[in-house]
Image (cartoon, rainbow, N blue to C red; front, side, top):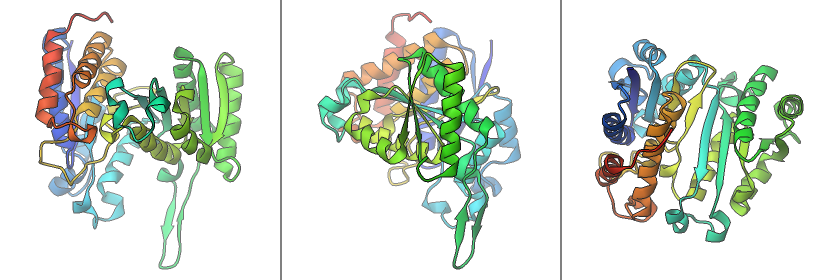
Length: 356
């Protein structure tokens, strides 16, 4: 079996962390016989520099034909003066839309060895295990927008079908975990949120009656994530709210460098990336935290490549390296990217077989 992974290193530290992931995936391939083939493509600012646009047609076609896509990060001040329509971030929005990747899944687990790295008190975050499901192809990021010298608008729009499909994704996930779904909106102000709340309520009532549902306003959710994060299982929310809340989740974990994500649709390749940005201030220094990208690669193995045993091996190797004190600077340690990557590879190569 041959599995093709398109690697979009992107900008800043993106190529550094995806290179680390490819090294680890090659070690896993040698151990598990996964048949992995890697196809590096320019994306974001790197593609603008080469081709004048962030997502060239040839790169999109390569992504369409892949089994999975691994992304580093995009953007940076170098492209701040590029027209909005062709900025690096526009390429990411276009890719998500073109591949119909409507559900972004971001798990948050606080590793026992990283409790002290979090700004929150230890007794609040021990045992945190939640997942945010962010709707990814609708809302204000994809709405019509205007701009004049004196006025600007950004349209936020959602259809019933868009809310239904991401709700089903989140509800199925909740059903496989602890059976609780929290839907986040701003229904006291926004009409789109009132539609969101009505649709989520109906889908859970009619299709997932065994899943416990609660609704929270986004401002309350922002407060509860830092005051009682252990209370949550699966959280589903719209695009903008999900973008903000998951960065808050990353702070709870102790570092943006720790959180992985998977962007999935109903068919075709998934897109897997850490939630951190391109961090241009440390690009090229070799000190970026690769763990979020490695955990994203584990999600890729499980969700798109159906290699659950290899995914479990990778996750166990990352967690073992962290438990043994191989921590990058953002986690309070001194390990550089190469050291952290080598530590994971060493644990992959010596791991006991893990059943799928």
